[in-house]
Length: 313
Image (cartoon, rainbow, N blue to C red; front, side, top):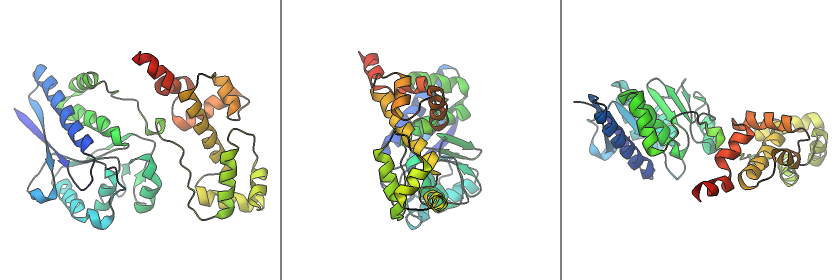
């Protein structure tokens, strides 16, 4: 029987739920592989630096953690071990902010990657050579795999099962665990989290003003007046401070409000569109789809609290 070694990297404050969850997922997958008469199994084990550096696994998974991402100095020894494993042919994978450790190792330079949406701007600033795709929940870039949110270990685990044990075992495992094996994107779950610590008081004043007017008609001229700035100056400073144009910012605010209404109310789509500032429901639907990656109906079906309670009844 051939075994493929998968090392689950332990480090201070790492998310043990993902480590144990992956062990369980691989155990289920191995059982299905056995049922199908497969000749390959996954051998997963926990590993940390104090256990020595002789291990040469085929895959290394760096989990995320609940505390902020590791800084470069804190990650130095782990990063060096990852580079060594990669140099010996291992595929390196990360979950959530575990991607920061890969970033510190240099393995993501020039590569595509993803991480938790909440830390995407921090990641971009720390690793400008990496092509970050914060909307993707998983990016498989050959010998580097990165998964985004904290629960994206399920997506990563199924992808590795697909690689090692095949698509049939992956599908069986997903069904048993009640996990959607494909089609998810991080932007389905992310929330609008505007930058409020940029230091530009005039722009911050406008941001607070907009938050209080969510859903109301507002123009660039009105925003400029609120900031006490000439329009061109306002546009330049707003984008520098927030990273987006004022019109995009307003759309993000409106969609955030619409998401809340879709999740917790039974209002019609037309009513919600009107409440968040769209006179044309079709235009609202297009903007919502572009920002969230889901149609309005699909979003409500997936996330509406009343629907979820009905399913549990």
